[in-house]
Every structure is written in structure tokens, then in C-alpha cells.
Amino acid sequence: MPLNDLVTPNAVVPALKANSKKQALQELAEKAAQVSGMAARDIFDALIQRERLGSTAIGAGIAIPHGKLPKCPKIFGVFARLERPVDFEALDDAPVDLVFLLVAPESAGADHLNALSRIARLLRDSRIVSTLRATRDASALYSILVRDQAPSAA
Image 1 (cartoon, helix red, strand yellow):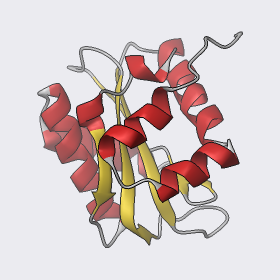
Image 2: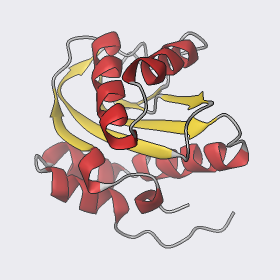
Image 3: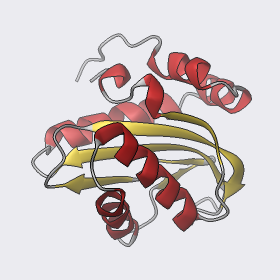
Image 4: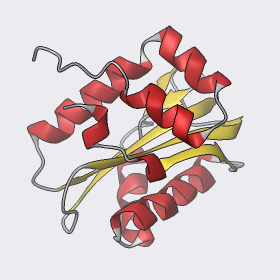
């Protein structure tokens, strides 16, 4: 699943202002609502419910918060570079400054897992992560996220 199927240019936030994990999730839910037309509160509630199971921070300053919603028409994402890193309760205790939010329909199943896997694979590439951290422009961030999107063998 190529990332340009998940994220659109208007779903990239180059300098998200947040002082806490909760505030970051609220801001991301607002952006996701703008992109999808869904209710921000529903998105935020799904994210918080998932975070209660364990932090979605994967280490090295990266988090992939995600949730499933019954009224979600398709899988989509929002990418944000945080203006200042925030504590996301990561296992490595590193504060998070790059966040890729993923929202999926309740029925998404394997597609949801494939999308999470694709995002995680991209964000494990230290070269890409360094470039994302150094980039301040939304369209440039989008280009970095979706370039080199050859389908990977499953």
C-alpha cells in the first residue's frame, strides 16, 4: 500500500504546536477531521482508547497513533512534525517529534496492519527520518513521504 494512498498533501502539518501527548493527539484529530469530514471528537476518542492499550511511540522520536472507527469510509493518514518534541511514553523514553496518524474503518483488518507496517518501515529509515526532521515545508514533507513508493513484496 503506497503512502500516497494514505496521505494527501493537505494532510501534512510541518510545525504542529503541542505541549503534551494529549494535546498533540487533539490537534492531529482536528486535522484528520478536516481531511476526512469525520468528527474530530470521534477520532480523538479512538486514539485515546488505543493509547490506553500502550503507547504508539515506536522509539527514536517517532509515534504512529492509530484507531479504527465505524463511520470511517477508508484508511487515511495525517503526518506531523512537532514544533517541539513531547513525551509520548515511548519505551526508549525519547520524546516524539514525528507523528504519522492512521485512521481506518473498523472492518479494515489486514489493510490496517499493512498500512501500519508500511509507515513503520518508512520511518525506520534513518536517512528519511533525518530529512523529515530537517524539512519545514508541507509540500516538501509530503514529497519525502511518498517518493520511492515502489510496491513492496508482501
